[in-house]
Image (tube, rainbow, N blue to C red; front, side):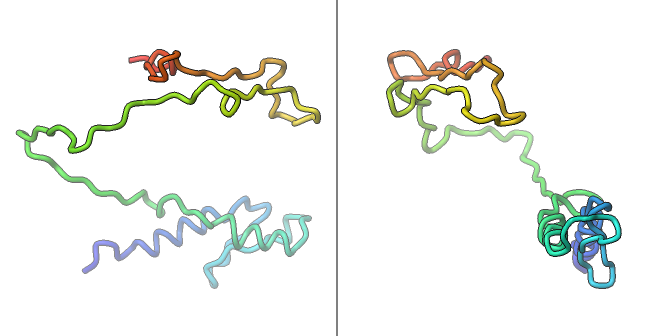
Length: 140
């Protein structure tokens, strides 16, 4: 007996749920596919069908009922040793013409993606080139 016997059924049930919005897409349980809902949308049929069949159910996060995962338990006396290879030091980007490029106001209206006069500034580390947590805004 397979531990994942219902996985395909649960996965397909989630695809049916994600066939949305109902004002645009509709689930066809006979073919197991998401299709355009021509009764509810005025979008061009070809574009609507492409969006529903190719995108609305393209990326199912988890099967219906929840995600699958795994776990393991370490012994109560387990002690982690030192890593075989220590992680590299944190390094900063140099404050030069390659990395320190100023933001500017847009020449066209970007809609909701507007800094409203407050442009971001570059954040660089101290002159040593070695990052400190405080240089990067990290608080412990």
